Image (cartoon, rainbow, N blue to C red):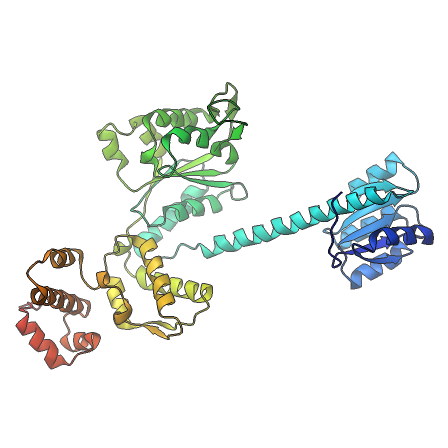
Length: 462
């Protein structure tokens, strides 16, 4: 027998028999906070004023019986659990009670252990329902927070394709560099489709060892291989009536590509070690950060599978090609991490924003998000993020940075290379406006002119 020991749990007893009420109070009062009334009318009135976790309701009462009380109670509050109590065991009454929404039906005389077990199960059910509702709200909030931010023309085109393809069941292949948000696009397709209330299952094909991938996708039967102690359901089965997202699809071995092709043709498969054919309705969305067509030419990816997957291609642009989106994303992530880390950074200076907008972002949105989180952490309790707070790699381009790293001609020469690179980049950011560049570098304009001359920096147009 499992008991709840929380006196905060409140139980209402409704019975016109004073002896029955006192008996139930004696059984329950050590573990719960108990109230009791002698009629259905009083119970409804009390429930309008106070909150209870559970109601023990007598079936046979004058004026308004238990079934009618149950109907009115459930109409007022569907979430509350009710256990019906009767002096005799009548199948008709029990059936009517359950159909009306009662959790259970018990008969008098009350056995203490039996009633405590029934109450414990009812309260555990209520607790699980609350946890499920909480998790659903968290998932919903998470989905809302996982927004696709973008106002650039290329992203508007992507959004348009997403809206069109969501209404179909066609296979989608998403192209894009690492960190461009391919899974977010797949989630958006699912969320806008008629499958939105069904599972969205995401798998990174590169993250699962090839010898386990078939079982991961299709499941296995007990004894199918060493360690298969029980039957396991695969991801395609979990995603029935929903969407499965296969990221980094080129990582799939050729033999598994053949099985995936058969599934796409017939919407059915067999578990590893099994003979039963399982048919499901699962939409397939895949993603790659390299050219599948090139892999087909190199005979590393099946051409017939490529054509099956590539029904509707969506190409996600890298962040460096999304004109106008960097500032939008910076402000979005700044707000996100301010709230998450309980900070109040007001913003990023214009000079720092110019550096961010001119950087090539090889890691795309993921790199930008990680950088903003780092800056918020390191600038805790400060108001603004400026160029001096930005990491070195943002202030020099890839080529000049590599040249700098390879220099072995001493500190003085290395410093000159760095200064030249740093000033050239600042000039480009400021559109070669020397006064603006000097302000950005926190030096006098005359000092900048001297540096330009001594470092032999070629100005634009000269």
